Image (cartoon, rainbow, N blue to C red; front, side, top):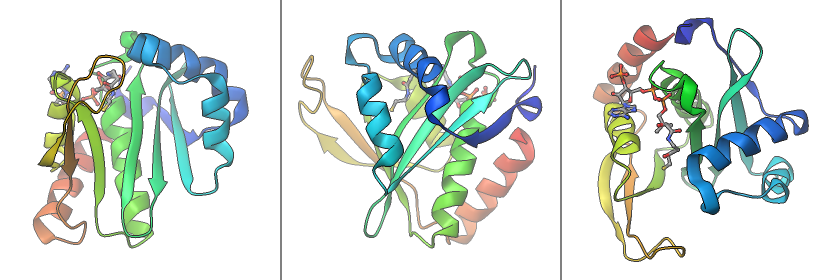
Length: 169
Ligand SMILES: CC(C)(COP(=O)(O)OP(=O)(O)OC[C@H]1O[C@@H](n2cnc3c(N)ncnc32)[C@H](O)[C@@H]1OP(=O)(O)O)[C@@H](O)C(=O)NCCC(=O)NCCS
């Protein structure tokens, strides 16, 4: 499978069992409950997408929140057997496009300091470290790094996203 043979679409309630399983594989005891995911589908300021593998299986999902003056990437995860195929990259491209279409200036997120894979993904997409939230994660007291894109209208950032879209679509 290549990233380009996968399909990105809006997440629906019918996806929640598959999404829960991906959550659990990705975050273990820290995973969101089904109820929390249901709430995300109806909260009115979020947008959730899934990526389907060619066999129709849901292989990953991502969610953003439209805040007053910024988009927040709340979650992104890919099922372990489908990693390093460009699926997170495709979902991130979609999230950045949604933010730009809504004329939001930038996208911000938090990531565990130890999560170097996710940081590598975000850096590839132009995110830069903005700061640190000390003891942000309640389960083990780990710090979060806060990362933000440059302005989505910045010409260099736009060029980067176009190059990444050529590569991953
Ligand atoms: C982080 C995560 C979403 C990446 O998903 P993925 O589909 O494997 O990522 P992609 O294949 O789209 O990777 C795109 C690029 O990101 C970078 N990247 C992704 N995973 C990486 C890793 N493990 N190590 C180094 N770089 C990585 C690479 O630059 C990669 O491009 P390349 O494969 O062409 O070199 C996935 O590892 C995951 O679900 N992790 C658990 C959940 C999680 O940590 N989510 C983020 C919470 S903040």
